Length: 121
Image (cartoon, rainbow, N blue to C red; front, top):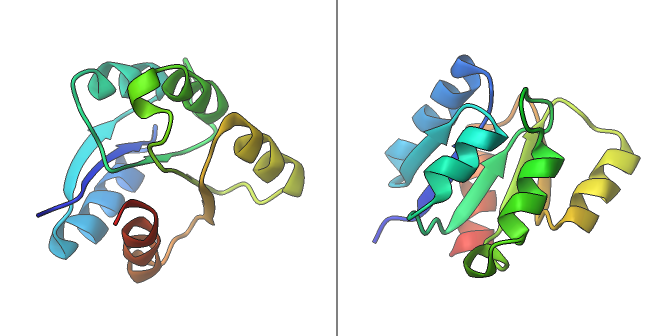
């Protein structure tokens, strides 16, 4: 059975890289281009895990995490933050919002697969 992942990032290149890293590992990958789109894609989707960037237009990663956690059916869904940011205060803010983990870009595809398997498996 494949794990279902929603990846939210405003960079098309990054969305493509995430998809190319996860699909060969057997993940069912769904993509969104920002937090608002992510919430739309999430409607009716039951992902095993969510990946989100922080810096995005319309709704940033923090707003997206808050919006996901406000939905009862997604309160326990693991959320990994994938971002160029590495400041401790941002990591703390993401954890407080409900993020499960933090991965700094550029990411190692094997590590991303392993992290997702750990939190969603």
